Length: 264
Image (tube, rainbow, N blue to C red):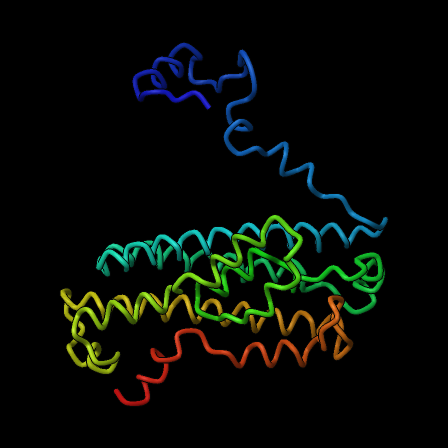
C-alpha cells in the first residue's frame, strides 16, 4: 500500500474538496493492506443452514485472535529475556485486551441450541477446535505443554512451528528466570517490596495475572458453549467432550503467581 506524508494527505483532501478519493490507478489501498477480499472469500459452509455461517465466522475470528495473542506474548517474552520488565507490560496488556475480544466472540454463538448445531455438526466429520495449531501455540507459550498434543499435526505445515514452540522456554519460564536474575526468591517477595512506581516486577506480575484471568475465562466460556450445544456427548475430534475440557482446565496458567497469593 502506497505510503503518504501528512502534507500529501492534506493536498489530496484539498484537491477532493473534502470528499473521499474514489478513483485509484490500481488495487484499492485498503484491500491491498487488509486483504479484505481474501478474508471474505474464506467462508465456505458445508450445509444450507444459515446458522453455520455464524459458527464458521466466529471460529475464524477466534483463530485470528489466537494468533494475535500469541504474537503479543512472544513480544513480551522477548523483552523479558532482555531484562526489560517495564517494556513487557505493554504487549502483555494488549494480549489481555485481545483475550477480552476473543471472549466476546462467544456471544455471537449464544443463540445456538443442540438442535441448531446438529443441523450441520455431522458435516464437520472429525473436525474440531482441538486441532487448532494456533491455539496449541498459544497454550505452549503460556506454559501449558503436553507433547502428545503435537501428534495430530505431524503431517501438517504447522508441525515444525509447534515443535519449536514446545521446545522453547515459555513466557512463564523466562519470567521466572528474570526473577532469579533480579535476586527474588519468589513472587511473595516481589509483592512485599510494595506497589511503588519502581516495582516493575510487581507490575509484571499483575499484567501476567490479567492475561491468566482472561485466558481462563476463554476456557470457561468454551466449556459452557460445548455444554450448551452438545451436553455430555463425545467431542467431534474423538475426545470425551465436557469431561476432557474439565480435565484440561485443571492445568493452571502461571501457577506460582497464584500460589504466592496464599502467602501474601
